[in-house]
Image (cartoon, rainbow, N blue to C red; front, side):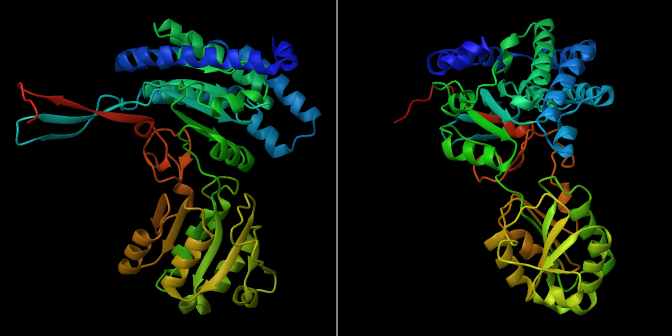
Length: 429
């Protein structure tokens, strides 16, 4: 079937994707009415099916890894792609954990009564159909599908070509789990082709079948989705995160936070990419912070003041301030106080995650209020930018937009709401 699609992609791809959309919309209606108990039973059945099908899933993954290796993919890429028994068990356990989270659907968000006696309630409802487009991490298949299911949404998943076999095997296990619980298998569908035209089709919304798109992958994928999607998008393009060491920062605390924010995992979107040090404390704080980073294997690219603190510092250029390195590299600058720090973050940041280190509560309050980022921290590492660390249990991604979902997108963010109004015969004059 895949070969036929490549020979004549337009009519076949269009029909294939529209059919996926129709089936997902029908499944979404069933999920919206499913009880918490039924959804949890499905999640537990999915976890069981993943464990039962482990040999087939791992065999499919071995083929994906072998193909990626033959194409010369990097070691880091292969590590993201590869599954073993331990990692696959973690995937199944993550699905089980979502069953243990509170059901976000049906929550009463607000209640009030009008003078005419109308009782108005705002109630959480599913979004409908969520399209997820992701690249090499096959675990996203299970994570995204399970989160959408718990929030009462159907999911259309488009895996990257590198993880296509693994994702297909995981999707088959998820369909089996859904069926065991009496829910439609179409509630979680994997696009059954590697054809890149499938992405374009999803971005159109499939004639209204898709309600929101979530891209998970590199900058080029997210940029394309944000530019071309005709439906709302939950995403962030870049994670240019800052740590500002204020004049009243405790040096020992600053050292721990800066080291963790940059070096705990340099590839995650919450990793610090820029260090700002207040000129008022630079004489005591700058040199030890720079030396600590370099000693930990981090390249520091700094302005003139930072270069003066340590001869090993590489001169920074204007290209470094908006850079998301995703590597053990950090840009560093000395700034003239809180106003200058906030201005730097506003000019060069990506509105993802930014932190201030200070013992001054007034300065911290200003930073938290004036830095317009999805996540703003006081005396804590930027690497807490994670749904699990927020207590959400899991996340489908992090969004930096200003509509609906912002920050980690967990179960609550995968819902909308409606107003339910109860009257006693009122009519409008």
